[in-house]
Amino acid sequence: MTEPFKQSFGEGEGELFTLHYPKPLPMRLDRWLVSQRSEQSRARIQKFIEAGFVRVNGIEGQAKTALREGDEVQLWVPPPEPLAYLKPQEMALDVLFEDKHLIVLNKPAGLTVHPAPGNKDGTLVNGLLHHCSDLPGISGKLRPGIVHRLDKDTTGCIVVAKTQEALVKLQLQIQKRIASRNYIAIVHGVPEGEAGVIVGAIGRHPKDRKKYAVVNDDSGRYARTHWSLIERLGDYSLLKFKLDTGRTHQIRVHCAHIGHPIIGDPIYSRCKKLPTELPGQALHALQLELNHPVTSLRMSFKAPLPKSLENLMMVLRRRL
View 1 (cartoon, rainbow, N blue to C red):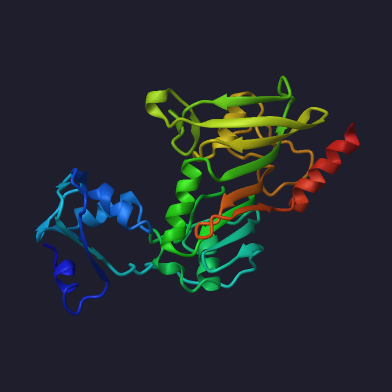
View 2 (view 1 turned 60 degrees about the vertical axis):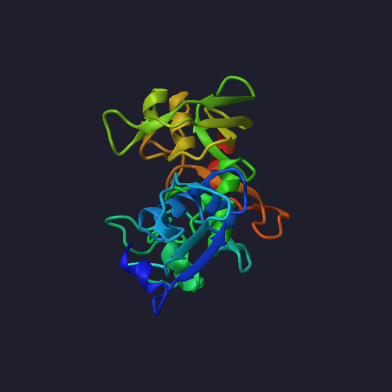
């Protein structure tokens, strides 16, 4: 039994829950706890079990422990860990919607979503910590409330949870494709046809570990991207994308894979000559639809195009 768990029965911080298993058929400990504590993800419940924060009839449990009718389960949820070196920083946030459960933002180019080694401040998380005082207790140390990510130079809609319950439910919506994310981008060349689907597992590039690539199924993660043609712009195309999965750099990698990399992509496009100045790849998260994690109301958000993308389209149309 770990020391933090002992302290929870006395002066220790955190919350202690005592539950009783009511079913005649056995069930795994981790699965049942997730069904009882919907604000916690299964991965987090398993971490609590591994840390010794769960007991079954007074004995430390394991994730695979089979519960029997009448078993007493005690779960201690530790207090939020401090966010290490993360500090709140005041910054201008383009808020599309906000309530006490979530916040939806229009992210600008050049803004990293969360801290990483070598990039400890000036991120969206730092700005959110200043804007939302209750974020520190949600999710991981460096990614409080982050439901999904956008690349540093990708603009547009991003949703952030303000409670642990909202985080788990929103992430589940993305996993089950209940939430819908639509992007637009301007790519090199003109794809064949008016629409299509790109399917290809994405993993680390075999020669450049800083990049991702379409790889064999056994060495990558399944990825599926729907695209449709919005407008032909001479030697370029304005495309719309809908994601079935959310892999790192997915749209950028898939576009490069089919021979139509996104304009301005510093990693996946070999063409460095641009029609106009851009802060990064011409990729914008245009629309986000989701069910509110508490009310279940269907909500839709749309982020206006950044000036850089509007200017690029204007330049390309003038050339026609």
